[in-house]
Image (cartoon, rainbow, N blue to C red; front, side, top):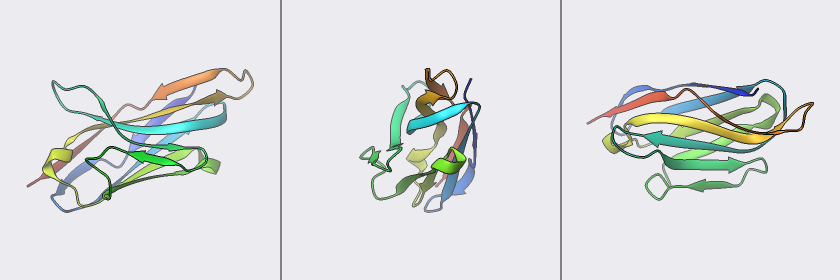
Length: 121
């Protein structure tokens, strides 16, 4: 079973930066895609950014030019660099990883536990 552990959330003033990390552990053959989502109370979870194993990225319009997704395939870890943060970026951020398990070569789709990001005005 592939598990994801997130870190890096916290409280920051508007205009500041945070870097989230998502470390995957377990038997992993390949992580095809890592995604970052966020959710606020009463709203659906929304995709913020994603990155493929080849490094192709995609971003929500609301974060383009401010957030950058990256990954270290050797460490099975993904990152989300968040710059120029705004109060509306306040949310619980979740990472997601989809890929192939080692040994069994079964597909997996795992979620992190979430980390709170709070941006004060």
